[in-house]
Image (cartoon, rainbow, N blue to C red; front, top):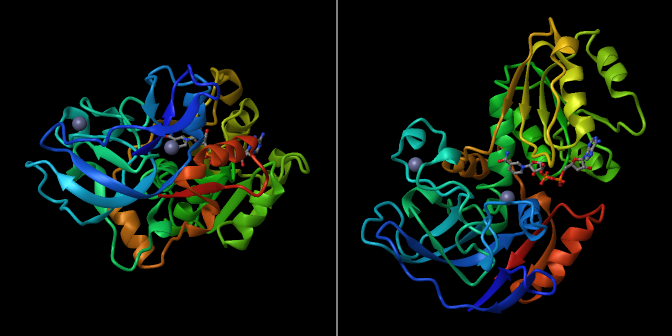
Length: 346
Ligand SMILES: NC(=O)c1ccc[n+]([C@@H]2O[C@H](COP(=O)([O-])OP(=O)(O)OC[C@H]3O[C@@H](n4cnc5c(N)ncnc54)[C@H](O)[C@@H]3O)[C@@H](O)[C@H]2O)c1
Ligand SMILES: [Zn+2]
Ligand SMILES: [Zn+2]
């Protein structure tokens, strides 16, 4: 079968090559025929050597939907023939952390697919702990609509959940990329009255507005964000901030625009240490929350999509067949303004 493999010896570090079909290794595994996958910023991080735990010579990819073609004998919920959405996190459901919902720290898993074991940018993929990592897609939800459930949508939900949003809150979301846009969607669902979208990319801000995700969009290259947030909130600041951009500037902005006693939820990943200037913040009594996504709400998110409460189909701005995935990577890496997510059809 064809698979997009990362290998530091390849000229471009990735190549679509022939690989053996995956087999059931453990009784809790499933084999899934991938029908649609996506490229994630984290795949690029692996290519650039920024993910120390990533193994060489593996198939990339951790965001996908597909059809189950085989299951191990201990798989109870998922059956051959099921159309499923995959969780980007592999988790056992039974260890200390899983029992508490902290699946990102599963003692028998974590971010495995496309990082430490072969991922989904291939014709077939082996999914460990299939009952945990796969969720059946409701009949009326399309593959496009379900594609982002296990990664960017879960991450956006995680950001909004960290912020403990209450009815009527004003929430600022820094970064209107796929994760930020999903965070805005979830903040609205959780009852925020005002969602302020902040990005330096006006096309993305326009999408936030056009999709009805944000009722106020701000570009830090055009306005003084701190100043304008003060004006918009009667000098109070926002009730919570979701940081989904990942730069030194946006980390600082996050705590500066937060009102006293706010929660700052950090979904973004940084490529260096950030500084918390505690003396400057003294008296602001902020709560910071950070983390890798505990993607435990896939079933609920699919139901919300089914009920048309939320939708992420608009994130797909480009489509390529698997045979052209190397071209898709080149496009995604060049970050054109009009590109949010690329769907790979298999
Ligand atoms: N916590 C997790 O488990 C998890 C999961 C998925 C993604 N992530 C992280 O979430 C972040 C967002 O992911 P994404 O796929 O949406 O990425 P992205 O790069 O598409 O989006 C980031 C956005 O931030 C904006 N931005 C950059 N500098 C800015 C600035 N100074 N001011 C305002 N906006 C600025 C960019 O224009 C872009 O639109 C990334 O850091 C990613 O690594 C974390
Ligand atoms: Zn990802
Ligand atoms: Zn576990």
